[in-house]
Length: 331
Image 1 (tube, one colour):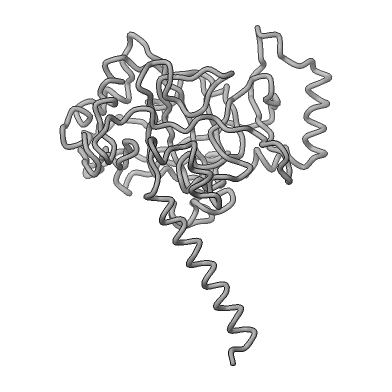
Image 2 (cartoon, helix red, strand yellow):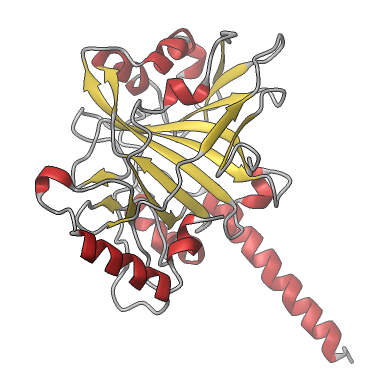
């Protein structure tokens, strides 16, 4: 007869195997069509039906203005000979990767660079009126880029960090159609024009400029105004492990550059467009647990939503008393 200890061990092992199996299914059994975002919570309830899902609507009125939130301090090593950038089509999106010799990090201070960048990817629409995952006061943008970091202070790699609390941090940037080309996409155009990238599994090398800087090329010029909140990955497995920073200012992208994205194909060879998850509630109704708080670093300005100095102090004190302010802001 099996002992209680061995039964407990078998039960734990079974639960672990089941969780890994579901995560594996989540990684491959979804798309943006028949098994699209409206079914992810049903298909993967363990991962995609939680209380802290992303994206959300970044409502200026709902967000709590907090001048104590720090913007990140960035660092990138020099681009030495042999460093390579590669664009790949994974069947859901395109993703930019780079050689491990290139270090791209960020943190609260120059000395505390706790996050290491792992990849950059994009979501876009079939028209210029949609494509972003987050919305800004209900407004959608033509595309959204995500620079994904993992907590390299506590975890050895992104695979270990992805499912852990405070495991990931993502910088989100909106793209707005403009007469001007986007400087980052100018660097990517030759690779995007390569027919090997069109279908799933395709990849193309990107020429690396020695003066290339990820942060100055990807981020908007105004890096002081942003939203921050605790959320999740926006695709299965939807782990709720992400500290999101989404910038208020959009960056330009030309119609010509957007068309280069829209020529790509999903895994079923259909056009890769509308590869975004629609916004979800900041705090779903009738759910237990501590509500999420959306923070912003700027005044609501002309919309007339800026709180008075007194109300600002009151809101910050309320957040402190609730134990939320620095939990959400500091890592």
